[in-house]
Image 1 (cartoon, rainbow, N blue to C red):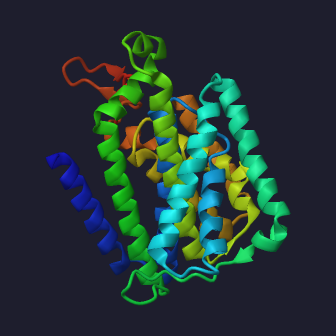
Image 2 (cartoon, rainbow, N blue to C red):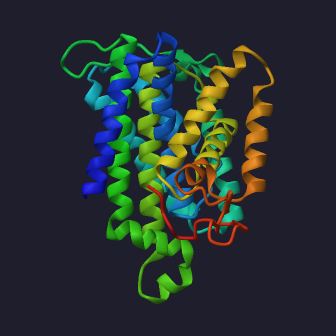
Length: 329
């Protein structure tokens, strides 16, 4: 618990200190990074702790965003809109997940892809409510009872606090008995089933939690971007967040957040210099795959993918990668 509290305090300190050194562009970029970090952590939860790879996770992001955009035309209460985004996304994840988790890994990937595309087409076709292919503006303004939050600095702090709270809740879940059982199901489903655990219940639990968190990220993005479109639920967006998770590190909590930071930075900053920024991202992804599993978070925290020299023998040795099942929070 002391380690958790220390980590949360450091994250909060970082959130409050960054505006002191960032420009206006940097503050907006950091705000977007916090939102994408929450989204990436939600996918990282089912990939790294549930063993489920989804190509339709952006569907829940789109549900959260459209909940704020559509219902926000009639309801101004920010607490209610955020709650509805989480609940609706979670309920849809619960219902669809009950079907999806019955499939094998490859078929799970394909059925989630179909689910995401179904939502994409739905948002496209319901033009009277969603604006269709043109998207729609978000009229709802974030207000927690202390006045409207519209300035870049105020939005930055809200998204930063949301990121810290999301990390805190995920950390508690991963360390809880349910989280440990879910990890056990991912590593050896047959053994956990033989021990008497209902593996489908725990897989459905983590999938529902992941969908709810993605819905929250989508709702926050709607407030930040003040515009939503069907592209928020497309398979390409799902693929982008998967790249974030892989670059940052599967099986960790902060890894996907780090991957989201790298991806958003390259997308927003490098694109001003070259239209071929996806080549840089692709090269980074290929390098990570060739160098070994783990992602940036493992490289930064352990350095186990680099050659080191033993002073005792003077020989170069390569340390072993993180063992399967070890978690870096």
